[in-house]
Amino acid sequence: MAKPGDLSEDEKSLFLHLNKGNDQEAVRLLSSGDVRVDCLDEHGMTPLMNAAYKGKTEMCELLLAQGADINSNNHEHQYTALMFACLSGSVDTTRVLLGAGARVNAENNLGRTAAQLGAFVGQSDCVSLINNFLSVEDLEYYTKPQGLEKEPKLSVALLPVLHKFAVSQKLSPVKIAMYLQDNLELVKNYKSLVKVMEHIVESNVKSTEMNEVLAMKIHYLAFMFKKCARWYEGLDGKDGIDGFIKFLTKGRSSDGFFLNVEDLIRQAIKEFDYPECTIFKQLVQTIAPVEKGRDPTALSVLTQSINGLRCGDFSDCCGICTENRNVKKCSACKMVGYCSVRCQKLHWQTHKKFCKKLTKEYEEQLAAKLAEEKLEEEMKNMNTQEEKPSQINGENKAVVNEKN
Ligand SMILES: [Zn+2]
Ligand SMILES: [Zn+2]
Image (cartoon, rainbow, N blue to C red; front, side):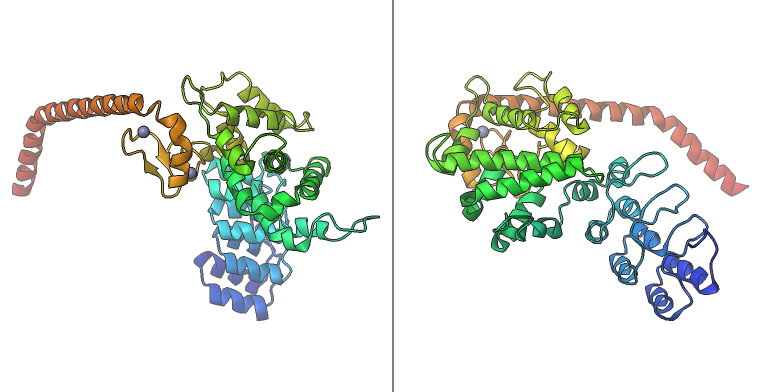
């Protein structure tokens, strides 16, 4: 095994070129030079770690193709290539390393995983990618009959839609229901698909490479999937999935709060079969004391623990489905945003009772903000008047200096 800093001349120049970003030279050395793909610089960093830290996706792919050890942990602080990728903020590099089998649970010498390090420096996109990662291969396993099975649990045709569903980062029940409504083939096969998902949950909790976050996420999605399918079959309510969406988007009469969503998410968490898991305990401890209708909502707490700390704020998102693109505010009150006419229509039954009150609130907030700005402006003017004498002194000094 390579020793840190024990490098041939070619290996030294490989690191030099990687550091300087001379990719062509690095590629040349890798293909023809006297280099070991897992040689270590004086800090125990491999070329792969170096490329990952710089977010060089193609270089990482090349190194992996040459057999680089994805989980090398000879770094002086036990950083892995995935940790470096996550710190770099490059989602593509992170995805390539995950796809190549990077261990998500590896810890550095301070006991931090790649996702935790990424969260610390605010790389929330990489963090959520790691936490939600379920490879296509993970699902492909279920497309082959296992053990005594005559039929596989998952048909090849459903694999892409199920994978898209499982890696989605949107946890709003409304958004989930809308996705399922657009992919009815999933709903029609829900019994076998939920079994697949439950199996994934179990294997993520029970294996040595435990991933509690992924387990909780898949459990949650499976729960919502079942609910949606029950509505579709008319077992829980009328009008199929449309009825389910209406049920979810009906606000409480006293304050418009989405009580059904809150209750459903709390129930989903409660039904997690592995109460010994840290994520379960944390969710329960955070959510249980909150009075329903106050912040944080169960959706925001759950989204934070699954997708990363910066993802639980929906203030600029659609008030119905939490979509963050194309959000337009209600033209009357400007207090609620919608991503589509559909979402606005869904909310109108509830919102029409509060729009007037919110308009007043908005006007009050606006007036307060204007008053504050005016006050700030006045303070600034006063300050600049006070500063004037010293400025004049400064100018005089400059003149004096010039004369000298
Ligand atoms: Zn929406
Ligand atoms: Zn309004």
